[in-house]
Image (tube, rainbow, N blue to C red; front, side, top):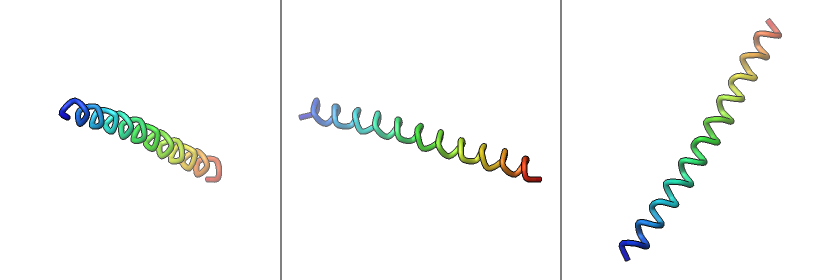
Amino acid sequence: MVQMTRKLWTSCVEWTTKNCFHINFVLSWNIMRLKLHLLLVA
């Protein structure tokens, strides 16, 4: 029982970490593009 819970918890943490990393990457990429766009337009 404990083994199962631990396994679930680990995979949940791994999944969240991956997704958080991906979301942060996409956000920072969009912000960078926006800044570049503003620099080019100005």
